[in-house]
Image (tube, rainbow over all chains, first blue to last red):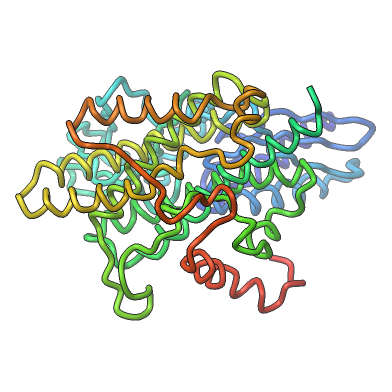
Length: 157
Length: 259
């Protein structure tokens, strides 16, 4: 395995503490990885600027990559440009979010925002609160299976 | 162009943007547990958390420009060095968070809606032309704050078109907010240079855009003043002093601690 592959494998073990089922790679937080003479530089994208998990994510990424035998040092930088959008969540990330009970981000046009229930798949759902327990999530309710659920708040430019 | 002048103007504008979001985030946080209903409690605390995040983005840029660490800028700076508009530091009502809070929801809705709309207009201007790293921050914040604007606009519309009592309380709140809202559009003593250096468009231009936008909705008198003074020049009320003392209480208890 190349060093780059080892770094990506290590980053796959780093999770957002508020969404422990999805890695930072699948969430699209890892923007670029550069390896210069056994020093690893990671450009990361902050999701929401007020997210209290950012510092923890940065620390966990550093620790995970530092653990690789051939790595001498690691720098993780949160970049300003380009900005993270929910389009960056991978297909794998989307299905993992759903398994965790969070509806993946949907593309929406105007006010139309149809979010299928992560439990039963019904689109007979209502938005209870665009703001949820974490900056990146909204609270919805499924009228079919009568479960409240969360959805990732869509972010696009 | 004198690069020292550019740097000074940029830093001044950054303090204004940062301190506005910072102090309003604090005022918002005082509502936790007291908002009209549980869903609003969740929404308002999330918005306040976002605002604090926006302030952090500006403070981190100030840190890069050599102004000192973000933590120190928020917890160790004396009130007269804060450049937020005074309207944002005024209390939510009478009483305190811990004792007899009698907060005014109408005032809070009007202050937040008016401010969020002004913030959007301000960031749109910065996105057109300004210092590039600041433009990147503006882009990021714009995406997040679109949800805030939607939230406060909904409250504003509903209360304005509700019962006669709601309407009259909202009109009273609008008057109260406008008494000091001019401070939002001021860039303070360095205003002329800030505009000349294309960091942002003029105070008058932004204010006119704001008035035009609001008057599409309601034909209300939007004449404004800043009768408590101009916060951009370091003039503040005692309310800022007490807020900062509360905010930094833990930090000041062990200033050398790592947070």
